[in-house]
Image: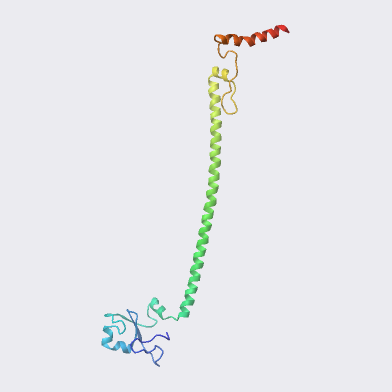
Length: 191
């Protein structure tokens, strides 16, 4: 407050021995009570010529935001630095917590993704098993088909057995199909 002075008569706040009142105008200029006592000075600001301005006495009854204007710069800087430290600490802590939450969500997501993959693989395996069982049931319900196809293969599809009665020979095929039988008969006789 040592640099605060009246902008009309340049009297400093602490220059007079007794209590000297100063006022702050709504246009942010400072005047002593003596200068403000003049009727003409109260209708128009001596500095910026603003008309119909309001005046507030400088002192402890002023609102905090106005009192801060008169706080020494060193105190303002110290309190600002302290406030910045507190704000930074607060925000850093909340950022850390948020990062931890995101890490946990990412871990849970990976666990769920792996679980879903395992379940899909199980489902596909169950489908294969179910299809194999259905194929076996079809063969069991149709005996003539079972006689033709025999057992079920590893892949679930029936394995066809070769039978000599699978089809009747036609034309020249008749001689070809009889040739192996004749040879086999001859071998049997020759023994």
